[in-house]
Image (cartoon, rainbow, N blue to C red; front, side):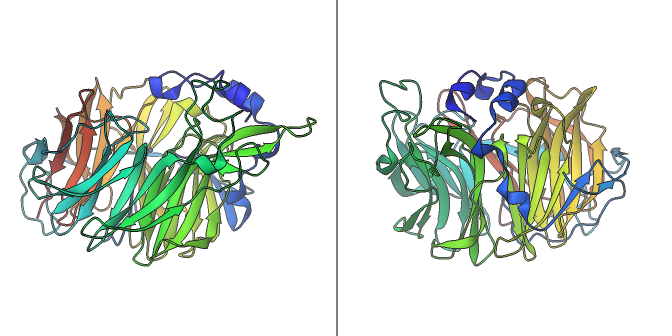
Length: 485
């Protein structure tokens, strides 16, 4: 969409309603199409019943939104009610109540963090048997800090500090890891569109990069995932002030990086001028950080948020679109990043009445939580198989009074052999466990833990679940929920 039109839209980060009609009216020209859905099969789904049984997780990354088809599958939405039994481990042994397994700790970090929001989340990744990697953007400097946390979530050991403005996602390896980050890119600078007297309030023109590091904090590689064409040229792909969050996942031999991007397209009937549109991009990389074929240059447009997870069968990339498509969308891909199937649902609904939650992968498919408005805001737990087919879509009836001012958010993570759902009500985080088939366990638990609408649930090496949050003061807290082991 043209920059002039996007400037007139309200800022989603401030909780205002985005002017969907304005965006739709402005999305003419070359940037409107969605390249991700042009290969493989396509299915439009309303909702379905009957649950599927999950098994152990091989690899997954949960991270901030989702975006028709030739055939329509008529289905019905089932309502999932709470089980009367208490939360139990897979062995059937009794487990301490969920409310007694939640712990919040303030780690001893060397600097304050920028407060948690859409562009400056505090990012965790599993590391070792019971610890984590933690990354954050400093509150008062364009520096990204990375280190490890011990199992107490308090003891911090520094790994590296690098220049950057945002870190969005991270994966841990047996030694070191990789992170998805945003930094300025002077190679693509344009005085007309980048931070200058002409655009004083806009962010600098930037790049999205994959940075790999070893267990001692040495940088192994840094790969630019956007392109190097000047912003003021047709075909440029970069990070601008439009939405630009991202997710990173690892399958044991490849990385997949899915991020929201900006692209320059020729302005219709005006020679030599470009319009800047908002979309998303998916890159595949090898174990050394080299870019591979697969994925796409331009996917959902406009892309409000993205989610990504992978297992031994391939990858699932979810987006939240407002035009191409105006829907939530799953793009299923092979292990090498070739699109095999597109599934869309909630097509034609207003984009600010729905939102992606979290995604969890296991060997047989994927769980996704999401929110939609049918009368009131409702939380869903959806199940997709490895072919990208939606096989169950359950309304979580215990999730009532969900905070409905956009941007709203749902959460989902792997907790041992179970799932942990989260939503916000009255500004508080509400948690509830479900078993491997999606059946709810116990009753919802209210947590005092700080959480933003952009924090992610992360499963750790011992099955515990954790998330991190930086308060407005810059003080970071890590909340851990113990698994039933």
